[in-house]
Length: 314
Image 1 (cartoon, rainbow, N blue to C red):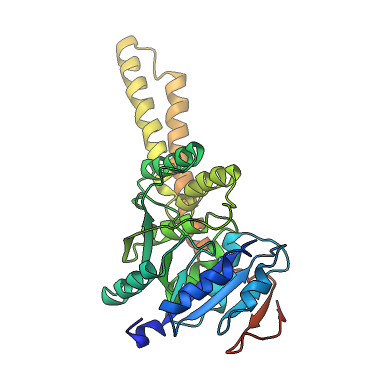
Image 2 (image 1 turned 90 degrees about the vertical axis):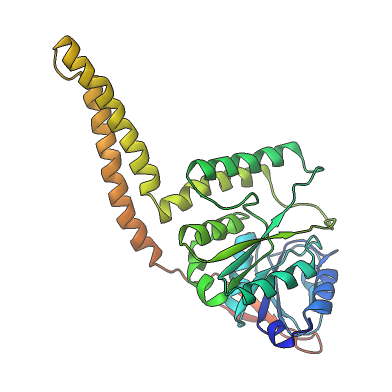
């Protein structure tokens, strides 16, 4: 980058699992654009040569999980190691473009934002089930009034470290960490922006499974429950309350037999849901104040010569 001072403000976290064919090339490509940035590779318990190939690169920090714990867990480990003002996520499979990351860094600095989240164009070659799954997740989010953009889980994004670090305990260990951070930015009202990015040909194969899509769907609801439970409980509760009244009051007035038992049950269910929403809102505020310690990993700083020793951390 031409602005070396801006370059030096960035930490780049690269989570990697069985990416032996792509990891070294990804690091090398990044280093041509980000000469002064802190590059952190987290090997998530790979059973191939990912760690060894990454260790060949000089001037990076390299962490290794002792077993496979998930994309989100690798992200959390990397962000815990990061020391710069901004921290970016960058996939290890050569799919992302460093020039996009450069533009995102300039934008977050220029506009004083908390986050910049990449937005990919839809791939025509993507499997139908994946396209349908992403559409279903997006529709669920919209139905809960979440304005999180068309691409909820793009892995290319930048955050101000001092802000996002407080939310690490809330991130899931799986692939839904991207979705969760997007919703955190939306629900907490932080100033952030979406940035259109291009994607290249992936080296290797996608590690995302069908089950991850169902988990992401559940996490949309779970995240709303964490940050704004009244949006779920109160809305549904008020719907039942008014539905019961609209049914019961006319029946009582027209037939003169009192308020119908079915209407009473519906009204009570609505009131209970509203009260549960109030209780859940208090619990969510308590949950947001909690933190859990990071997991176990080994850490290596390759230094200028690409060599280093692994140390155990708790």
